[in-house]
Image (cartoon, rainbow, N blue to C red; front, side, top):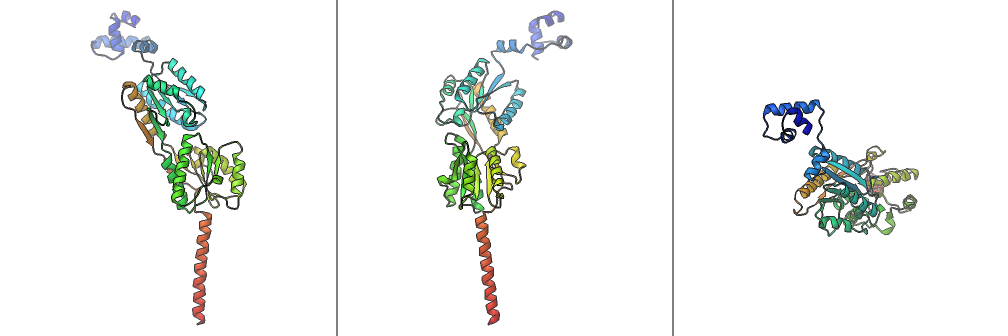
Length: 358
């Protein structure tokens, strides 16, 4: 700026007003400064500006596990929106490890991130501590939690799970399914727990019971458990699977057993990854509204950055339920209906023959 001021025969204050598009400069001087800046390839010193304004124009984004493609989609949506506002986003992966999450937060603070969006490990491991998050809240650091930290006063946004799972299970019970299995249970995972709650509510309303034998935990060797479940004489006629990765693995096991979807077994899952639309048959699934979650989270964070004293807000964003080819009428119900129809037809034929004889 000093070099430009000397070449333009004006003051650095005038150059600053021109480069920051502020009033108080004659058109001739403004043109002279801008022309010189263009010829010299002038670029503003963002670091110096940030130091002067005590701003970094950096935001932090911490994912619980970047192996989940949802986080990548979310990050891209956040970045595309905030870069128009002059912000860059730092990204980190906690790998479902609470110590790594604490480290990532420290790094973001060291880089002077003005605010953070955090998918807390606590959401998928509910027994982990949250003291480091509480410390940020006490210090009034701008923070939005993507998930739930029950009983704590955080700005938060999450996907609605209970009603989504309820709708999905009602879809199965409306098709006549009564032996429904729940695949991928994790006691420490909050979203899975809420999905299970929705499944149980819908099953109870339909008069069916999901006993312990129909609940498979997500653990090593779970596909062997699935084989045992599907080769029982009273095997389930429908599976509610906790995520698309498990659904993909289950789909292979089902095929190897010679079962046909949905003729012998209906499948519903959560996530709507790309393969759900390309498997044969395509999978009935739910779709998280990533764009809406990102929009609300950014708005909350920017509001918190502007006013640290504003009331906290919590949002739950509905998911879409997408019916595809993997769900159909319960085979037992279909068989009973067929037998009933055949009995009705046979009785009618018997009555007709008897009438002819008379």
